[in-house]
Length: 352
Image (tube, rainbow, N blue to C red; front, top):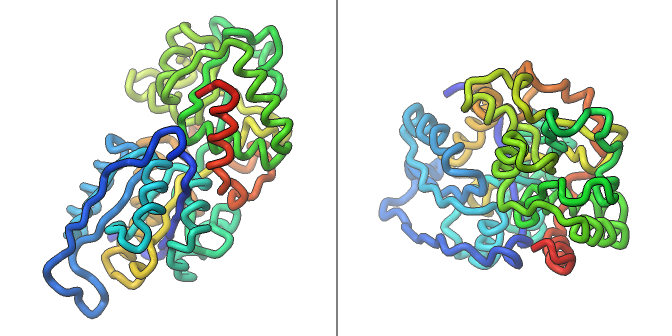
């Protein structure tokens, strides 16, 4: 197995349930055979809030290299978190892989994660860990304003995401209010600017006739095709589309714009992992956590999705701006665990 030093755990939260409803992917396939002394049964159950098309090749690679079977249940990150919280200690899940820190924080707050070993925590920067050491980031993802450079001059782009409520942006901005990454961004705005300012921003966006889409990828497709002028998404969607089309990303009509000066619009969030209580001693689970944070596991994400690695030994994709050079807001990711309140605010604004 590549990479020997990584282990991580993640947690998640309740929020998305309000918008999306709880997912119905229960499963209780207990293994008939008893565990080995190291807790290994040759398999474990993973709840994945990350997209199946993305994660499945990595899971297959892991299974092929280790002989360990992974029983994966897929769903929206918020849905999977809601399901975990609903199932409690009856959940068959042993590992939770989430697409944002807020969901991890919500599950962590419920006390459902095991603390991660020091050897795992040591390989991930502290800024990308749960405060209690019970989850860690696996990849980094920056929020951006993607824009069609044939329709919008770079000089016209706003200094702050707050400016998107101004009249000149009416009908021009794509948003995905039910998407977990948008909800995490709004939670970050609440942390950085307070609920009143965030409610005003949401109302301003809603009044400005936004282009509503379900997913970030739809926003990017429409911006790239000129159907929408700008949109709030994560940075890697542009690079994924460029690879799909076989075009250098800098030649795409759509380009990423990183908000400057610590603006909330440039939030640096993570996808991350947490281990459910009682599972950290399972050797199969530990092997999987290590694998995600190994050189091989990290390279999978950087090469396939153009996300930022969490491990220092792995280089970020060459086409990305230096992580250290991004002017992300100084927000503690552990403070993004109030997704439920965020979802209520988004709903009350009329965006969802």
